[in-house]
Image: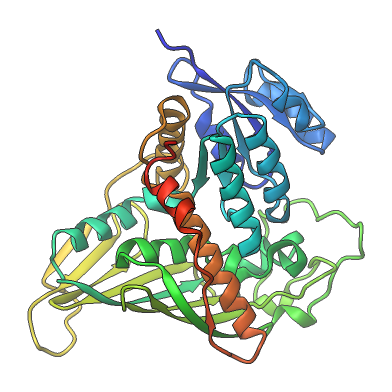
Length: 391
């Protein structure tokens, strides 16, 4: 019988749901060790993951022969340095999205994985969400013909709490929310449309959160900061001492296969809503919610006026666990990949391309909307990762 894959986790913060999804004693994988700088986090580890040890330096996990694979879930600006160290140590690695906060950081990670031959996996869990897989299946069947254009609207009601009260609000650590928050959505756009962004332009502003009260440097976040929310958004308090990322962003994309796409993001809406519209040569689809039981509607007869009932209505499938069951499926794929290698639904190349699109769009919006081309990735690296990371 194959033993449980023993996983070391670096960083047990806001994305601890990934680590929890990996802890399945007797069912394939366990969290065996956690590295975190926070003593309060380390104290809790043995109770959270039975039998796990806690250390204060992630390098201790890299020299531990009992650790089979590593999850990197630290703040975005640390991903490159830590992931490169893990790859050089020869341990299969799961990197929580985004892969990096610049194009160069992403390319450094991909080159290191290629040079060392160590297995690299990037955690774009939306590829495993029921609503995304449903939309992709509809498109793959040809129900709306060939995709030609995609729109995404992302209303983030908790944005002021999740992204403006900690390090996410500091562009030195994220580049911007058009990269950090949008990396998932840009990856989905690419997956649904069958191509990668080649040219972008964008506009954005810090419209609301720039003038709200901030904490002094070194002041901890208040207790219950993700449990109690001020309303209206103008009443928010205790923001991070640095706030210099945009809270409204809009970007346009031309993909390398000719598809045109647009993405819009707002961090002070009253409700949380992520909406995709894909129009093809023979119809369109649109999702109304992204949770189990919500709908994806398809219109593929016409022409008519607007019909809310659509021609076909699909229900998002039921699922259990965080992110609509996506985290569990994501981790199952990583565990299999760490053991056996081979093809995966997630892709390091796709992860790099979503960061590259968001990075160049952020440059554009900070340069008055000037269009920018997305840097191409070394064809040797594309071939290596598209081939399942086989030498």
